[in-house]
Length: 512
Image (cartoon, rainbow, N blue to C red; front, side):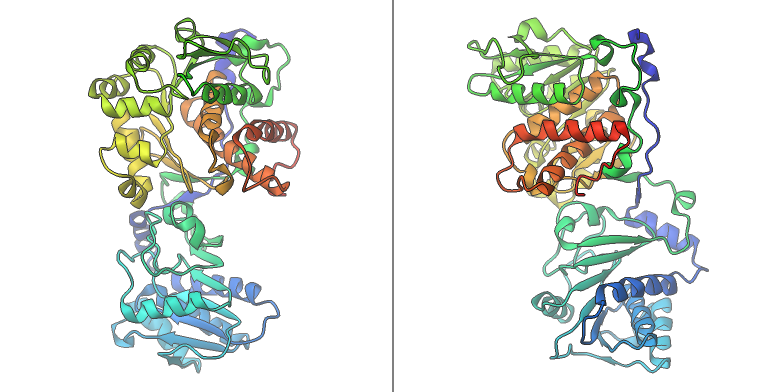
């Protein structure tokens, strides 16, 4: 197939769940203000509660807060009582100060024979329902409610959170202290960023989404999506499926990698091996180090050379793995930024851009696609702030970088955030602590470069690389390899297998 035909290698549109920020959710709620959303939410959550209860004995303790989340809790309590469950509602608010819908839910609960107490029971609960605070929380819970959160977390009863665990910021994923540690979260209308990134990944447990009979896709334009390998793999781009026979290695691109300063030659090798395993037609590695390997015995297919012989090659350039930050590295980065081809900027290349304003300007003014892969410390340097500030609002940090750098960006970490120059974003749900190992980022960069070399557009390449990278780790952990002790060089084979399974239509659930 001629290279000019590669534009036909497009991706189908994967069915990815929408992720809405709080402002969008408020607009959606207002637009459907005539619908009984609170009643629907409470009814849906009560079904989740019944499933969690199973045959467990003991009361269901429902913690009801002073706002609309408390209203949801009163509806849950009423529905559970109607199915003959023993329900104890703990409410430390003022019923006369409840919002309109929550006041009606409280009145309906009391009218159905329910009662509320201010203190949790001494007996062991079968289930705790957290309805203290929802998506409007922007500060640490006050003392009275903080004590209830601490009580719930101390017990051994499973906890179901309504909409979002109390104490967790719905937009940022930052947890105030204290915050509910839920075993499950029944979230309403749509996913929120805070459920999927930052502290949220450890606080939410199993998440179920309840649209409340609202067509969210039709009702709003979601800027964000949740990335799951099961959905992405079902819409695998043609280039990754390899469903045409009249092709050759050039059809699938050449990735050039520049990096590997003295003492860091392993980084570009990891990236190169990963690139080969996910389908790059050819991979050339150009080393900064004067004493460079002439062959990679673990991947004889890789072509190794001096950086000067490689930087102008290929239809995609990856620069950064093991690059270093000295004057030589700076010179190569300047050349890379001037190249009229897709560019993946990783590791030390990002640190150099943070140090030199002219490099930042050159990056922003590039016409060819640029993709950047910062971890939180690198993102902080690029934003002239500290890591804590980045982690406090990962979505804001990623979207700011995408806009300011005119690049497709993945802010790596728990719930990696992908952001694009058009303002859209994704939050990745695959992967976990197994990826917290040296070289993992180099493997991701190599996979990303390989997908760009295969002519996937920047957004598609970033989505598939990040989600597959995490899914590869999940699959290994499911086999008993890790999370502790999983090493980066084990990821490419796992990723290749998942791609092969997806291309053949076989099961692609990395956890099953």
